[in-house]
Amino acid sequence: MSSKNPLYLLLAFSTIALLPIQAQTSSSKEIAVHAGRVIDVRSGKVTSDAYILIQGERIQAISTSAPPGDAVIDMSRYTIVPGLIDCHAHILSDPTTQTAGKYLMTSAPQATVRGVANLQVWLAHGFTALRDAGEEYPSYPQFALRDGVAKGLITGPRIVAAGSFVSVTGGHGDGDLLSPDKPGLEQPNTVDTVDDVSRIVRRDIKYGADWIKLMATGGVMDPISDYRVQELSDEQMARAVEVAHRAGRKVMAHAEGTIGIKAAIRAGVDSIEHGTMLDDEGAQMMAQRGTWLVPTLYCFQHDLETGLSKGRDPRSMAKGIDIVKEQGPAFRRALKYHLKIAYGVDDADVDESVSKEFGALVRGGMTPLEALQAATINGATLLSLDKDMGTIEPGKYADLVAVSGDPLTDITVMERVAWVMKSGSVVKPLAQ
Image (cartoon, rainbow, N blue to C red; front, top):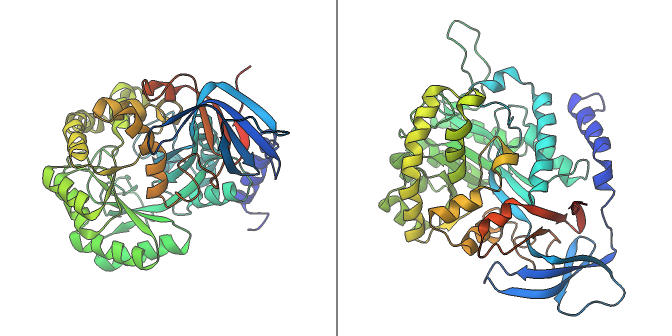
């Protein structure tokens, strides 16, 4: 990348700004974290008064005996859980506004600066990995942020990134909201034919997409689409899955209406996002095929509280009211059929919302352990990160989160993260 490129300069200045955090990185030094309690999220087993032995970036062992010679970080008053994973993030989101078309008033460099700031918020709440669920910018700033984190240029969670929103013209992912007498925007993510889908998916992959994001149905954020209506055709979704899977990429589908959910499942997508009107037949299909669900319960509830004050179109608000009524029964069906569920937030106001999904999942019918699993081992499995993340085990990254209290009896303690370690480096120290 040329040093004259604005994105290069942005990342360089971001690196300078974040040097104090980066400087805490350990290399091969051996340390131990003395935990009051360590939760095994696979089984729910709790080990008290444990030492997590770390060398460099990875966990070496878990012991109930103090190690000789190692530097010890005293977390004996806290419960330690694995680093958390948000499987439905939009890292370029602006928490100050929910105005439809805000993308039209924000440049890619401006959005990238916002993304750098947002990444620090995810880390502060204990999220050491996330999946970006697609962005509107055809220059793919999310890929630059992903690569910047991976190279150590900026500090943030590990990022698995989708590309653009593959949307029909005029659909939920069409960002051109200008009036028809204005010059049209170049929207490389909109499709009208099956061959258009191949082109967009291949473009996303060409520039670095880990996942492909399909807009199977309408949605809430835009004022014009109907979330109950299937937008991409069966043939278009099948083509997207064929091209993506052939290239070794997975596919996620924004799918809220019943018909569109089932069409996306039949097409072979790997995860359904939202699943707001999931019916029994759809849940059975997901169970049989092993399709994942990322329900994003809290974001719709939060929007009803704050949407109008942040510029949300009243038409979107009306849709949100209906969706909140639908999501409860749909989520209970997902639990009834024992679907594979991963944690996802999908809320622009990351600081306010990113940890509130835990409570929403438990209110919806999960146990606290199941909610923790959704945000740890389940998310890691969905994103193919489970060899390195998702549990506190030897060989995995030393991604640790400390909370006061017991999340297995009170899941809301996950909203008050006290300390965070990523790859053996403390990225959020205890408050003094």
